[in-house]
Amino acid sequence: MANKKITLQENEIPTHWYNILADMPNKPLPPLHPGTKEPIGPEALAPLFPMELIKQEVSTEKWIAIPDEVRELYKIWRPTPLYRAYNLEKVLGTPAKIYYKYEGVSPAGSHKPNTAIPQAYYNKMQGVKRIVTETGAGQWGSALSFACNLLDMKCEVFMVKVSYDGKPYRKMMMNTWGAKVYSSPTTQTEAGRKILAEDPNSPGSLGIAISEAIEIAAQDENTKYALGSVLNHVLLHQTVVGQEAVLQMEKAGDFPDIIIAPFGGGSNFAGLTFPFLRFNFEKGKKIRCIASEPASCPKLTRGVFRYDFGDSVGMTPLLPMFTLGHNFVPQAIHAGGLRYHGAGVIVSQLLKDKLIEARAHHQLETFDAAVLFAKAEGIIPAPEAGHGIATVIQEAKRCKEEGISKTILFNLCGHGHFDMQAYDDYFAGKLTRHDLSDADIQASLAKLTTPTIPQ
Image (cartoon, rainbow, N blue to C red; front, side):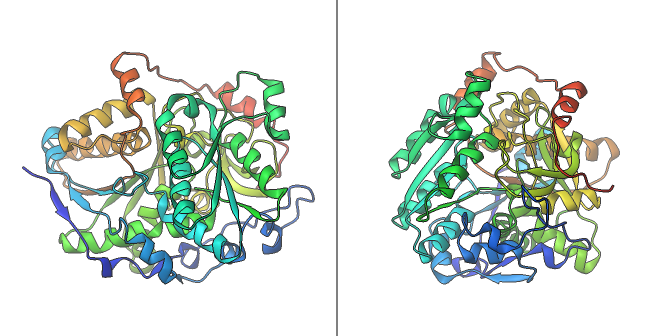
């Protein structure tokens, strides 16, 4: 049976972003100054971000208008399609109904332009000339390069070394859109030099690349920093995904019981789930929302909830999050976009309050799932997306075992066309299962001197 495709019209692109902070029963704790450990205000973020983004970061307004200029740029690829995965259902022999929102149709091939466009726009409106950032697998760096090119701005990207070496075509995408790309850690920053002095063969991490990017941005008043996940305003922008999915599910005459998305810092998961969680808050629905993370970087499933830095060197404000410790360097798995030590504060608070769930998958399991999906549905997923698919398969099999029919919705956040080396390694048997011991986690957490949070 062919997939059922549910589409929207351009006039159905959301006009506002949904701010879940307005509905959360418990608001996240405030960020702290990295030096004084005292709560900070919006002014502390001014060296890094334009004022409009800072306002969004701290806003508790439920709906925040999307500028017309941003909405017009969204029309390049939005609305994105939603599919009923009949073939996957058949392969699994499950009574569950499976749907996926496909964000791989964007020019950058992922969901990341949903926030790259508005971030570049607000910087442009404030007169910023250059934006600097980090990227893991290259999805975020590609998206910001694309956005900066559209708005005639300079873009520089610190790309985690293991992905810089293993995913050269993402680097080429960034170069094509005019961005400069560096293999992180570099010798260009104090942060990079410190890491290389400790480990000349460091594979890099998102935390390290963030430190380098922030250091560059803080030195130049005409340069600002942009982040592709974790922060409140980034998660806010991604809610266009879930809002569209709400309309599409209504058109399909269905509604999800379970929603699943991969998890690195939170933007992917938040974008799809937050607009549906609103139904739990407002109408008492019981939608289960599951974040799927790597077993080799399991901050949600095995980390601790406490204040920690968003970067490796300790330059960012202290954020209340689930973390493995900012010095934690994950194994060099192919899902580079998920190799981050911490989680966004909103998602962390939701997990602490048991309003969402989390699950971890080993690398081989995620590629098994991604290949099964590709054979059934035809789309080759990004390695990050394979984590969400692995959880979908678990839930679909559970429905079969229990003889129950549930509606499952997940975010196919990007295609894997530039990740074929990862698939080649998988088929060649070169990928390994990384088993992270409790001792490894405790050794990382033992290095933390940041404030604890009463449990």
